[in-house]
Image (tube, rainbow, N blue to C red; front, side):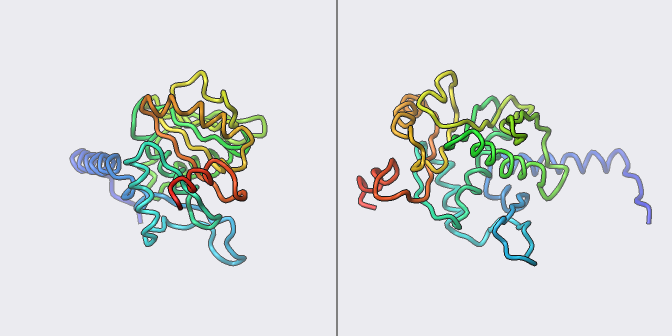
Amino acid sequence: MQALPLSDEELAQLIARQQTIDAAYADDCWRWCCQQVITIDEAAEEGMAKRRSWPAHLDYVKELIQILKNERFVIIPKSRRMFITWTICAYLTWATRYVPDSANFILSETEQKAAFCIDKRCMHIEENLKHIEFRKEVKTLRTKTGLIGRMTYDNGSYLWGLASTGDALRAYTATKVFVDEIEFIEQAPALTRALVPLIEGGAQAIFASSSNGPTGIIAEYCRDVRF
């Protein structure tokens, strides 16, 4: 069966509805995630689908999204199956695509690990939104190994993966910085000190890590608040 062409009026109505929904997504990260984002479960058992809809049933994921939207400094002790990195990457993708002229960064132990988050999380989200009409054009830069290490949207905002060093952000005025697995980063104390002026200047910092023993940046913060 061949689809009938839309009239000019019908096309205008369709475009207007799409713009209205997209404007709603710009104000509501959780709604955008639940209605549009597809994730990948690399650890899915053989025979199980790896592509998954957003886990809207997980209350702690919804709470984390709200915390990320409202708090400037967020520290998250995590375990490996808690969906934390996916949630933060989705939040950063949402913030980059909807907030003009923002400079958002993902830092990890190496450039390769940071680029993995950009390529296999953030870019995957953008390229696989459930409805193609809501996907946005993205310019990309790749690392030497071929992973996408930087995503730039038409609104002037970008999301960039870098290796974590004390001076990794020295030349940049960051809007948001996510440091993944910070407990495993050798230069974590120097990096934390370097982020303090950015946070004081209005940037958001997000630290997340699984445990690396009784010591570390997150471990020290947790002891301070008796967590």
